[in-house]
Image (tube, rainbow, N blue to C red):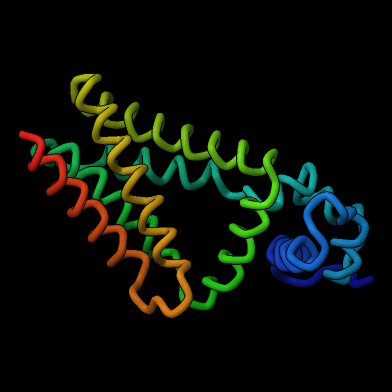
Length: 190
């Protein structure tokens, strides 16, 4: 086993997702993940609390990023402009070379009800952070909640489309398209 190499957490994540995709989430142990990554069980636990966390790491940083961007927008920015800026910043981190890994990860989540529940909780927490950030900007609660939910829908739609085989549009383009399409759909309800 290697003592230290860069990108340990990423190596563990790649090893875990590969194993989960091959054998199923419940049939893979932490020891097997560590061994696949060329590391020890102890190293695994330095980076992740359990094997579920390996699929959901980084969520706190994403939520903080959304909150910072939304609250940092100029005072004249509309709620949807603030949400759009946060989505654009988030989407900019989706590199094409990560698409295959993230598609496998989503397949693993889709095949396990406990992981689906965790994913829904993650999405709800992000929506709440967006709504809270908008309220901190002085947006009234119903408007803040609606804008945050539209942002979450746009993000989910863009992510699903980004993962589709053959898609070559960037996550940022897809997020902008989704947000615009949802805004247009709301206009038709008037």
